[in-house]
Length: 406
Image (tube, rainbow, N blue to C red):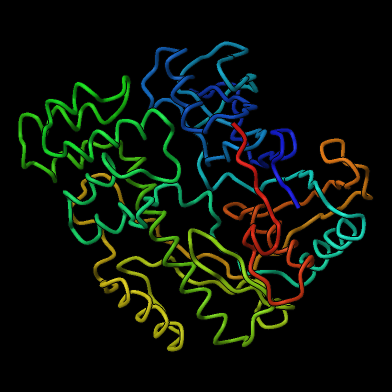
């Protein structure tokens, strides 16, 4: 089973409440992008309009490895069309305010799944319909974890441990899953010459945020905490959110295991093996939720509180540590995340001959998910139908391939 064989195999479109106002101070755009991140699109539009980056706002990040349709607002007026490498933006109208995450209503996914036998294709379609009835755990999936270093460390964890130099080393010198080639090349130099800030400044990519950090370190060689705060706040928030999401996944998995018992299968996310469960909706109310771990989170269920304490203890943390005290402008997200994910409006096409893999079949799956949930997780869970339960969705054992096209 193969997903994302070509970009057009994975299509996502935001469902958003648009704050339209013909006299509003913001311009609203509908953006289609392919092969670029949302943050890259924001930066390119800001440069095209000669506006500060802060003038461009999207309510959510969308997968680089997809054809994605999303919305953004620009402070002030803008032309009817903006175009650049990997994106086209069409003006929708004026808006009363910038878009916020709370404006999101969900995302509609249309996905072509390839390299299947005919019976396998039919089974995957049936499994998707089953997931819509029975649900699955609402884990954060791999896209959330681009800041995991190849050594398995997390800059967000270093920040919470108040290790400013360690967080900077991860940012500047440790390859991460989501790093582009240019940044990987620089990090090899940084790892070899850590502390030689003049040399690293000369080697730093242009343009990039690392240059302001290195300029400060060149003049203040031990000023790690201030240098850390020179990193773009949005990137620092992503670092924190990634590590927080890792903790939430562990907490949710252990809590569900305690409540429901034996798993029916497994998914692998960020190096973690997480359980799936048959008919999860029968064990949980639809609105069951677990707070995101941060220093003021309240866990009223004693069993859940014990799970949280155990997960944090393994990481050398307590709940009071979950506040980034060495940062000035970035914080851990707060709130509650639902445990149960129920895909809506699902459909599966009949299997058709696969034009990419001779003698094999493809099918098109479509479904809608709430904001913050992951289509790739649904596809992994559907793929469990191809192996006897329990199964681990590793490519070697379940033959599930999410091709990262370039």
